[in-house]
Image (cartoon, rainbow, N blue to C red):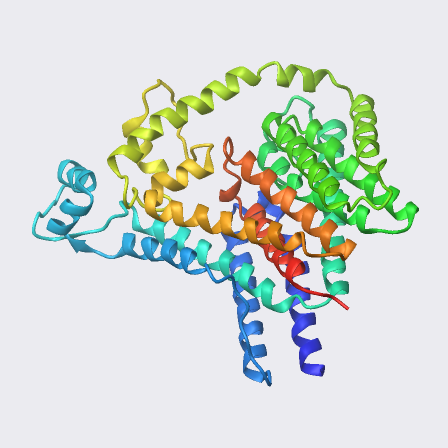
Length: 432
């Protein structure tokens, strides 16, 4: 029992550190910050390994279809290993042609890699391994209802703190006209992507509370965070938040989890609207008035990137290589350098190919299908509401990522995979 408590508390301490640390330093996009996150995840792996070694009956919990993620990682590994040039010409002709046309010391009898810039592939591959490890470790080390509650409360209250800091910083400290940044994130859209997961989780926690005062408190917090998303002036983020809350309302109604709390959803919207009107709706109206031009730009990027999919359909151009090759396929005139496609899902197809990307998307489909299937069998209001909130938030940020680069932000990746692991474990666990 003492050993179990030690491993559980150690896991919880590292997760709390990650919840607090990961949004700092622009969402941990700074290399040093992301390295700290990865080291923390590796520490979690050591804790899990130690638990297995000292356990009387060791077992590893994982979805049976986890091999799909292993297939994705295998393609990433294949992209960094030198292959005979003749073989490369067969499996990826356009990759061979680019090497032939642009590599100064090209040798048709030598060896070449599928990924054009191998360090970028290695970076993305290691990132993917770390966050999938986080998902698996969460499945295996979250065991108590109180532990779930504590971790969820840390997410909620720290999310509230980030929202409050963002609003105060933008409207009272910095110039209101300063674009892009919001709170600790370098991009307002990434801030909204993070909060899209926090708000439904907060509403879910509110629904799980039996005391009316607690329901109101957490509904109030959800309204504050929702208002901060709109005040960040992220258009797609605001729409994705509405989508996630609407999805949550539908699921809560279907599962009958509202527990005489029909008033909570309209109350959250009403309080959020009040906060927004107090801050002023002018900038929001002006920002949404430019929605068409922003969307057309995203569509233009997506159209031009389809040329990359056409030329590199099977194995892609290499994980993390989009910024290096998109210039060759860009049809519009612009001096901007595009690091990301602003469509994470299409960029993944471009970089790792149709086969590996399909395996990844099918893994997520199976995961959500399992969660929804198991949810119907559960009667615990805490489990049902937390699962509905977690699923609505993760699906919300998934939808948002069709027009953003959320999954290139370590803080968002951390919260996405941690909540997925927490939700999957909750829906299958009968807490005492």
